Image (cartoon, rainbow, N blue to C red; front, side):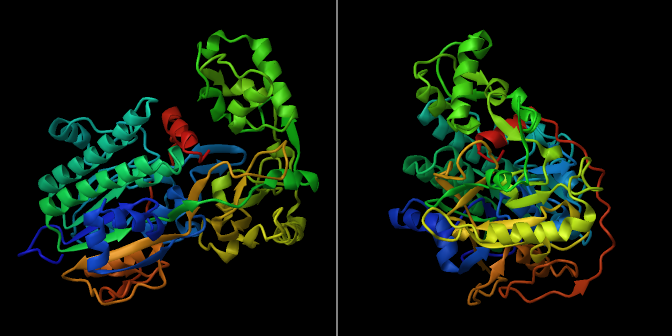
Length: 541
């Protein structure tokens, strides 16, 4: 990087800012909150980085670190579905080669810290601490390295540890970010890698947990900036590549309950009693009110309240408002079990439905196909006709303002290709400018105010500075699929011919090669309630 002297071990430092984008960064630049980030972005070359569809963390980071679309690597969402069952994805669901493993095969070592969907790690030349979707205290590579990190740097957490107090929540973010940087620098001292890949998740988390909270957002980015400054000083990298998996912004349009739309058109069946929703809710509790423990609740009072709330169209995610509307505004229990709430409302009956939204962050509709799903309702001979009908119906949906709800409604083949195409939603539904949102609830009006006032946008950011990079090159048209081939090219490693991206013009293109099929580990279940709880808190489940 500009200003460095002599050779360094770290030839390339990749900094991952989850949800990083110009619209978030510009006010921070103007306030002088992030001088290191501003210098990196303004001193070299930068531009927009287009995410994939869907632009969500669990699928986008694997697309970035493999250079391949979800149809090839197999991860479309935080959840993976087997019939009507589900599991939170982990690295065993990623069926393509991460770039650090490809580099390892060519003698290049790496340190990878906090990149999502990297648990459990595989052996390679270097060290890895997993990020989001990993459990706390996850297995790392090499075995036992996390214990060494904790001895050298203090406690380390994948997810922030905080209480309900706002100031302590911000402090929890800051501590998590600080430990991230310390762990990365420790591993760089120990491993002396040529590639460093350090990801910060709180730049996304803060918008989900504290939407629009200027104090919290500024605190998170200042903490990231401090860690970045210390990391640059400690590692003195030759080149720095800043990337994000998607952008972030306000959602000011409408929330569309696609399953209610499908229900009214005869495609979807519902049931009550809680069996229609994924069963993770039975293990969780809603921290919504103050008072006594939920195990001591007056069952008849609460269940009657929930029943009334369900009849007036209040969903499980609006429980606090529901209790207010049925006259239970006073605290009646700090933790109301979700199975009590769910028992009083309607859920999708997946086996009996013809089509449904299974997970909102998939951004798509699944068809309950005979021969593919255990209780398929649509014969294979009718599949294309049903899909075409749904595409036509959904394409014509307008919001209450008279504007198109979706920019695009298209078959999955328009966005994905590869051996895992069958795992994708059958139809992709892309909200207009991502200023509208979709959800999977039933039992209420088709349109309403967005549950999340801030959410993902498709455009993130990429910036490059360093002695190897052409800082005069323009980065217009860059996508997240271009990051892995660009990393390969910098290290003169042949680019996998099956990658969907191309080398960014900041570095000379590398040759291509046909690599042997990736021998991925057998898929293993995540099976960790704390991980599911965390994803639910962030609004992903």
